[in-house]
Structure formats: structure tokens, C-alpha cells
Image (cartoon, rainbow over the protein chains, first blue to last red):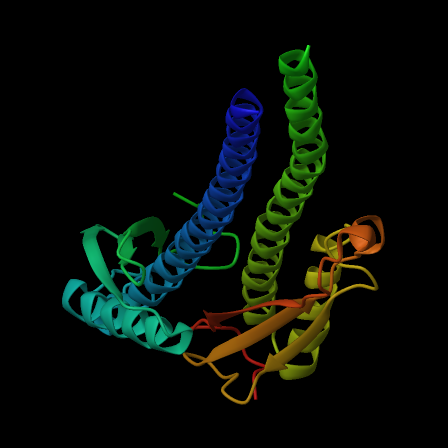
Length: 139
Length: 139
């Protein structure tokens, strides 16, 4: 009688443990997938915004240079354009973030954008350069 | 004798419990994996569609290009059954302006119908800037 009761208790403890294990496993899977989903989303958004910002920066061309038949990026205007594009696109996505790094090397503008909406920062970077003509060299 | 019988019962109970839970876990894995995949695909498609729209010369060809790009990228029936629905905000489509493309998809759920996965719509929107310096012919 007594032994029977003990065995029965052990059985129910196992059942409880199995249920708990699977519940935690399923819960952590859901959490993980949500986190991965959000991170992928943020990373893709950061790369897209960085590309747009770099393009906006590369189009801030010093007008006097155009008269010589070449296109030189105006670094000050490029920074302003890239920053305002980044802020506008971040706001339109409802994300919070900022420009992590920006470098202007000749006509090449490289922008890194970090999105910090979820507390796990996601960074994407892209570069664009100004060239003259639709078939100009894509250096 | 009674000891043996009890242990067998507990194991059977465990198996009866483990089997459905394991299947449920596998379904959860499938479901979440597909969610992440579809989300990423829709995001990438909206970003590419916005890019291709921004490179067009006028509003109507921007709409055509964005729709064509989104449809070409979302041919996966599992991710997007019936093709994507694309909406384009091209009110600001002018040199130096921008164009926003929103893509939404309803994945096929036939193969997961037994699991009771809810029908879900995934959507993403991206903004791309239109070049400042372009050939003539823009509005």
C-alpha cells in the first residue's frame, strides 16, 4: 500500500517535469525566433537606411566643380544630407538609432547606421560615390 | 510485482505525454522558422522595390517597376501565396525627393492548417531617395 503510493508520486513528478521542460523549450524557441526576427529586420533596415544616406551624401555635389566637368562631393553638405536622410528614414520606420560612422573619401561616401530600437544594436553600412554620366566608372 | 506494474504505467504515461509534446514542438519550430523567413523575404522585397522605383524617370513607371520587382522577388508560394500586394507612395517623387513602397504578403498555411496556425499577414515598407541630378524628363 505504502510502496504503491510512493511509485504513483514519482510518476506524476516525471509528468510534471516533462511538461515543464517542453513548456520552457517552446517558450524559449518563441522568444528566440522573435529576437532573431527583430534582429534580422533591424539589420536589413540599417543597411537600407545606410545606403540611402550614402546616396544622399554622394549627391551633395560642390556646384563649382561641375563647371570643370567633374563632380566633387562637398564634405560638409554631404554630412548634413546623410544625417538628415538617416534621421528622416529612421523616423519613418519608427526606429531609434543614429549614424555610427561616416567617412568621405574623395567622391566616396560611406555611412554606418546603428539601430537601437530593441536594445540589441544592429549596424549596417553602405557606400556610394558620385560619378559623372550614366556610364561613368563605378569606382 | 506491483512495483513492476507501476513503473510500466509511469513510462507509458510519459510516452503518451512526450509524443504529442514533441510533435507540437516540431510544429512550433516549423512555424517560427517560416515566420522569420517570410518576414525577411518581405523586408528584402520592399527594400528592392523602393530602390527600383527610385531609379525610374516618372511616377507611373515607378509604380510599374516597384510592382514588378516585388512580384519577381516574392515568387515563393509558401511565403507569399497569391503574390504580394504592393502600394506605392510616390507623392514626393521628384529629384531629391523620395518614394515609399509597402509590400504585404499572406503566406500559404495549407500544410500547417492542422496545427491551427493563424493566418497572418506580413508587411514591410521601405523608402528610397530619388537622385537629385537626373536627365531631363522628370515632372
